[in-house]
Image (spheres, rainbow, N blue to C red):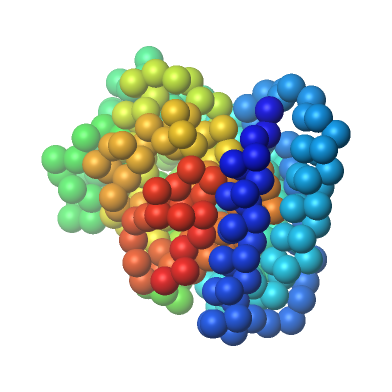
Length: 297
């Protein structure tokens, strides 16, 4: 059940985000989508008062959010990487929010079940070793662990540290072809640019140490190649969920984490966190983030 603390955190996020927009300057209004369902399964029905409170909070954020995010990602592109089980409505709402902030989504890269399955580690390790030798020698650390290495390889193909982004080159296409050809990632359509920002959207929480280690390695690897990485999950992913456990891993220092993207406030916070990540790595934000509901610096 949605708690009063959740409502309070959401409301705080709204006004902190609005305050940031006033201080830094907001642009013209645009539409922000409504609340979407979470990927964590069905919840118990909320009492009428809680439901009305939730609807009101979402309406306030939807009304104030556009002015807060407008122009925040102007002339910036974002590569969206999804973990298996990521909620389609959430991913769509996040990509729309990037557009509302003036940014573009360079491409969406959907990781496959095999890539995050601890039982397929041998396949991931073999492919990573081959690609390191064939395409990424000198670009990827030779002593990187299995999932850090594949994360760096994917990062090399989809991202860049150049704030303006870079054109996709032959090396990037070869890596994407190899990873998708091995069944570890769905091949996207035509992609023209590698992005400075990566938004990694969480999916199904397997709830085991093996999967947690895989996520930590992937996040760390992506961060080694991108200007900024934001790992985002729904509200249930925070606290004791997978995002909460990632925050306890040293690898999380290289990325920003955000829970609550199943709410309008969380999607506004996503844009602010992406913007911050261009200059400042790290930070834990969202409904259970230790650094507050939204970044203001």
